[in-house]
Length: 90
Image 1 (cartoon, rainbow, N blue to C red):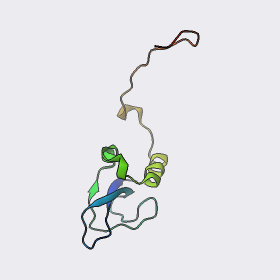
Image 2: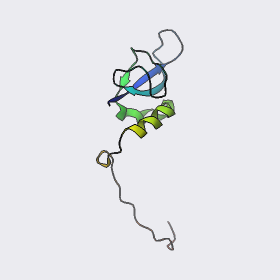
Image 3: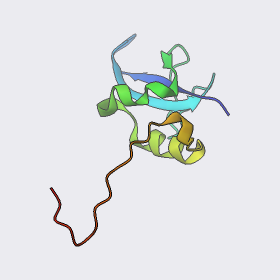
Image 4: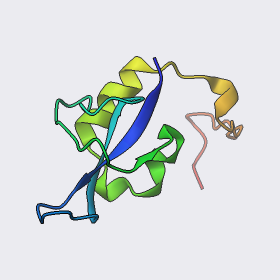
């Protein structure tokens, strides 16, 4: 299933001020959290989820992460130095 981000706008008539980003299926107007969104709302690729974290729907984000597999090839792995428990840190 393909997903997208879909904007939720302010309460003003014809508002284009994004108040929250949700996750929906591509072409769908119902967010994963259950909120109905405008059909003409801006959409984005879900890879942009981290761009404005303060206005992302927490519920949509959590449900999306449960549905989409974690693919290590999509993430940068940085080897951390190993520290023995008896060694002082820092």
